[in-house]
Amino acid sequence: MSSGDAPYDALTKLLASVPRCHFAHLPTPLEPLTRLSAEVGGPPLWIKRDDCTGLAVGGNKTRKLEFLVGEALEQGADTLLSFGAVQSNHARQTAAAAARAGLACRLVLVDMVEYSEPAYENSGNVLLDHLLGAEITIVSSQAEAASAAGRIIDEETAAGRKVYGIPTGGSNAVGALGYVDCAREIFRQNRDQGVRVGTVVTAVSSAGTLAGLAAGFAALDPDVNVVGINVYDKDFEAQETTLRGLAAEVCETLGIQRPEPSRVELRHEFLAEGYGVPNAGVMDVVQRVASVEGVLLDPVYTGKAMAGLLSLIAGGSLGDGSSDAVVFLHTGGTPGLFAYRDAIDPR
Ligand SMILES: *Cc1c(COP(=O)(O)O)cnc(C)c1O
Image 1: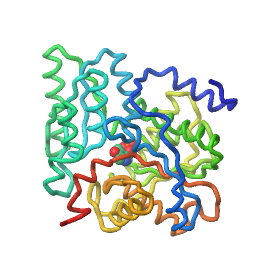
Image 2: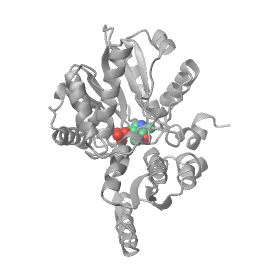
Image 3: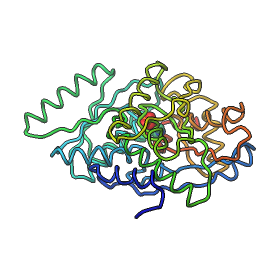
């Protein structure tokens, strides 16, 4: 259906030509954070509810998996292989997508987070991975993950199966198309709901989400700023390189213009003690947003990203003096709450 907006229609058509499965409940809601906005007293805050994508507790990986599994099926694969931390939301959504598509799923999970409580090892996402029927291999380093992957591919191939490998976080030029599509969805919702979006803020680990959003907004509305809060990589330069490389690759795939570098920003100062390590400031924000808005954030991704957003607004470097909306992309992570129960409530 034509919307009467040429860049929007062109992007819709480009995305429609790519193989895709449909697992997500779309569009996800775009809602005002009325009570939090009033407390903060800055620009109007909105939330894009990608925690509600619907596949086995939802989250941002589901949009990526629609395109990745679309490609896997096109290639005739019968087994998905992917990677993540023990509490990987991506691994859980991959296991669910495999189940939905009738594929087998092998997961290699790296026990590398400097945080430990019994629930981290056996509840939350990893519990759901088992329930969803994935075959799990736990290793203790990235190097071991690479050799385990090699063994799994050999084993499956020898058994006559065809493996489709999905990188950590589903972040390659195919997976990132899911967030080009999300930018399209936000653009449309803003117009239909009469909101003027100035900035979109999201947590960043493997960077496909931010890269896809940056590419999508470059095509649709180059005045939109996208801000990523690094929650993963201690090598800041490497993460910048990954992000810009991925965004460029996505734009090349679609034949659209690259984002203006000044419109895409990565902030590193909220990583604190590192990936997956909760801290008091983040736990306060998780508690605050839950009690003020009834919205559940998590300690690993969305809590840190929201802590970053609130701190940037307080410091005057986000939405200062503008009535344009700041949209927080809620990327999911809800099962992580159960894996970090001691950090939430030590009783
Ligand atoms: C994976 C994940 C992210 C980060 O997305 P990337 O595309 O890997 O940068 C953010 N939030 C949650 C809850 C995630 O699971």
